[in-house]
Amino acid sequence: MTLGSQQVVESLWGVTLDDLPVTEEGRRILSCIQCGTCVGTCPYSEYMQFPPRRIIRALHDGLLEEVFLSDSMLKCVSCYACMTKCPRGIKLTEILLPLVKEQTVMKLPQMPIELQKALENTYRYGNPQGESGRKRAAWTKTANVPVRIFAEDSRPADILWYVESDLAYHPRGQEIARATAYVFNKLEIDFAILGHEEKSAGDCGRLPWEKGLSEVLIEYNMAILKKYKFNKIVTSDPHALDAFRFRYTIFGFDYPITHTVPYVFDHLSKLKSMLKKLDYKITYHDSCCLGRHNNFYDEPRALLNAIPGIKLVEMIHNRVNSICCGGGGGGMWLDAYYKSKNMERLSDIRVKEAINTGADVLAIACPYEVSRFEDSVKVLGYEGKIKVRDITELLSESIGG
Image (tube, rainbow, N blue to C red; front, side, top):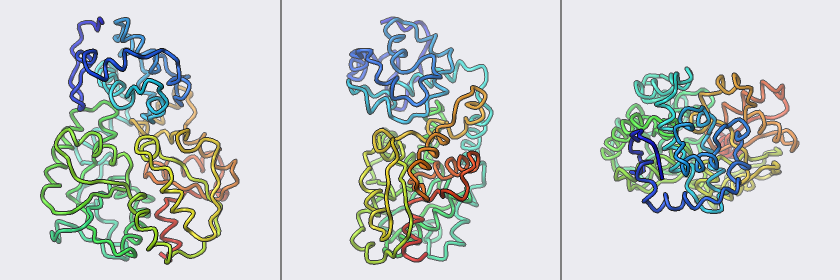
């Protein structure tokens, strides 16, 4: 296989494009039958010059330089749809596409300004919002329930709650954080947060090709985690879950970790006795990371169905076929770029599907989705017809928070 003379940097997976052909995954990639399933399931393939199938074809033909010089990978939102549906089981979103993205960014004449700013903020402040780390735990002052911060009280805790940046800084994210803290307190969970010591886990820094940024964050976060004693990590962000489960392990991360939804689901028997009736018709959006990549489909639905009075209806695309909100892989900071390419926002498509169910609540379990979907609701003129609520917000409301 001819790859040309370009030197390819090592990925966080310990694999490069140069040595990929001799690895087990490289042999699997070479087994691609060019069926086009990845193209058919990719939400943005129609805008890509090189969707996954054509990337593999270029890899075969020694023409990867053409892929690197295109902007195809800017349009990949890392939704795991192509990987999940691939009949050969090729780890497209986990290995091949990140490797290609790393090379693509090196060839870009200019990175889109929004994305560049988010990555610069994350490097400088530890969060894409560009907020001071000292403000990361400010939301706890209005939580109305105890939220222990390890730096202030270093006693061992059962749970380290890794809040992440969107819940710590975004106004709507802070509402979700307060609701989650309320639910945890009602369940009498012994938890603590890192507060100002926490920085972004870096998954979406990695996926938009910033390998160096991810390594800086991983080194820092691993050192902070070692300062305190706890039994398990619970995170409210499926992207952070991905970072810890699939990337940090290469650097020695071995803590048990899960997401808020499956963790609360494990306490469902205790939770049920607290829940009171809510008269809502709800449709649930399956997060790409929580659903397709970590296979949590039943747990969020079980929590919603446990609330008395709830009627749960499904959108046309659900579970493994769910349509991405468009925020992954750097897409959170590429809306202006997508608009310049006349690409319809995936969040707009998803909100239209939610409206078609007749639901008055669009339930989510990822902090990216609340801001993306609420913006789409406003842009599409559906304010007053549907609300976007995190599952923990609905549980908190049902309990009485």
